[in-house]
Image 1 (cartoon, rainbow, N blue to C red):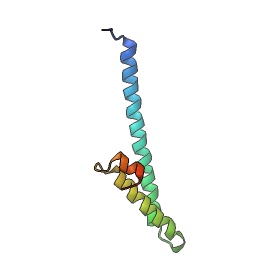
Image 2: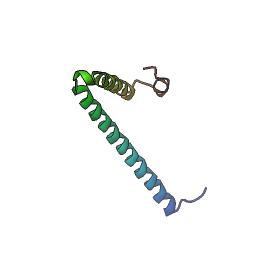
Image 3: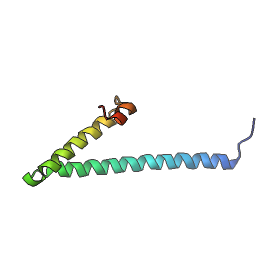
Image 4: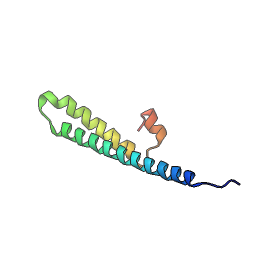
Amino acid sequence: MTQRDDGHDFRDSKNRAEAYERKQKYEAILNMVIRWLDSNIDDTDDKFYLVAQDSADLKEKIELALDPSTTIREIKDGDF
């Protein structure tokens, strides 16, 4: 069995920190997209009706994809 040195521990810690940062970034981006969709949905002027409808549809798909019961396979197939 080989011994782990401090470099390995540092890299493991750094990788965990980077993974945590990516997760936080993805959540922030997702929240930004949801807010943007909400603003489109709230803008219900006749000339923007189709944009509002598309935004509502996309928001619904995102919420369904985020549901814990939705599988990765369903998301990739667009079958949810």
